[in-house]
Image (tube, rainbow, N blue to C red; front, top):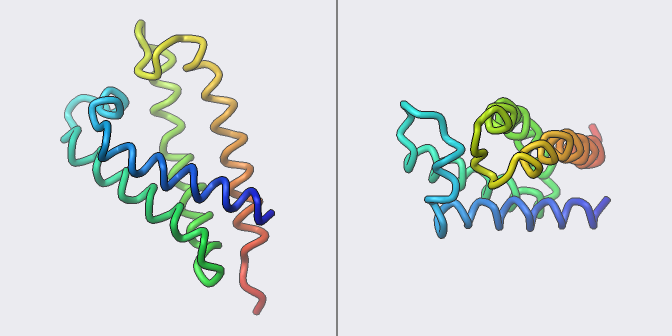
Length: 120
């Protein structure tokens, strides 16, 4: 479980940093009417903090729960992306692959959460 936690921590920290380094890539995922750059930076900061939180045993269960919730919130955006003529992810094939991948990531976040719960 430690390996999964480290992989998730690095993945979400990297994704969070990429929101700041390449914001234009992520703005295509944000629905019209929302302040794209602001939403992008806020989500990037949240992703980084949640990934970083996985390294600390006292809060790793909260970080894993936060990642799980974030993945649930992103799911409608990924489904919406599939319906577009030109998905933001790049291709229809990638857009379709990403949906079951999202459920796998949610399951992994749940496993990390379950194995990180403090003993009362």
